[in-house]
Image 1 (tube, rainbow, N blue to C red):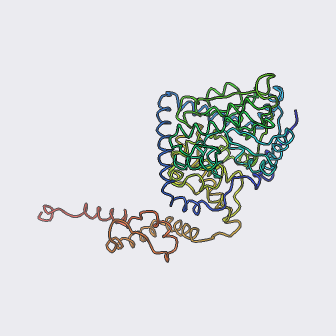
Image 2 (tube, rainbow, N blue to C red):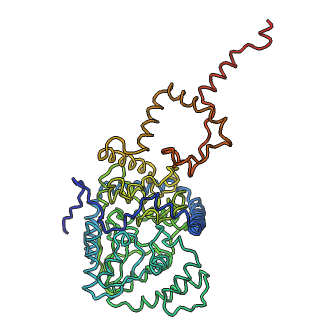
Length: 512
């Protein structure tokens, strides 16, 4: 067994490779502004997320000890982050003993080189893939394409995204931003020999995808497939993949060579721990008691399944996340997507606005840590602000990741970073916050300011101030999208008036 340097602890965090799909080209506010104008997108998101939320709530209500399961899942994930180096070496030993080969990839570029080399050595021209966010993260499809190898996604939603030349926008439902009519048009454009009379009925679309994929399954030059994993069991070397269609199982059993690219955080200590996670994951993700297809495989078995198994353990910035005591629990994520479905920001903007493979609340804390936040011009610097801090994501997280707390922590880091590089104050927000801090530190000054604003309520019509002209600094950013109430009577003014009323003599007292 080789000794592996995970870089924990390290002087400089090992961030994700620049080629990774973890950073967009625009800040979140800029990207979200364009997405908000797409009424079709908002309708698709609203319908899909509300349906998934309802199913999840029903499935969770069936479990009496749901909160105990969440506590157990959280405790197991903390055990992993506290002992990750030892568990990873145990996993390598277990996989090797079962006939597999383990490769270590420090970043996405290194992982891409490993997979490309393995595929070329086996003469692969086309490779079937099981739905895998890790391979999306490292842009593996593009890397293999540059080497002349075509990848074909076997998951239906991933296939839709691939045929459309699009990118996923949801962890569980990558094509959540597409409706049935759009999917029909995509299939007609990209699938050869498809009957043009096909309708947008789900059964017909699924049947078309099934025929397309079955031909690929039965004709695989080089016979290589690529997968990810939901869990990797340290003590047995077992990998676990849960899915809904069965296409993934075809990829895991038919090829001669199987390559699994797995993030180092996907590890769990023991086989028994699956008892907890296989109850938490399906209920939180699809709202089911269990996934229709749960596949477990360990190494290679002569005459059964792949003849070769290669496990690529991927860091790509995860060590940088692990190095931060305040933010490392982001690595506990089991990719259920429950936080996306309840997030008021995600359900209006969709996943593409985040610019990363990982959208929504979990992406807002995971992506900036994996890539680092490199100043105000870095799009990922804006992600910790892509939240209302309502706390709904924490309430539904099956492993109790306190996402709002980490968001605030990352915001504080970003502010400290700006102060170090740009000085104490950089713009109107800094000046405004400093002024508010000074004002609220003095009860007398705050009271005077509130009393002075009171007369405005008599001049302005309606209950709210309305949209403030752009000439006024800072305020328009709020009033463009929020109702700013008119200033009313301050508490101290109300209290003073109340005291005067209590001290005033009644008519009977005056006559006496």
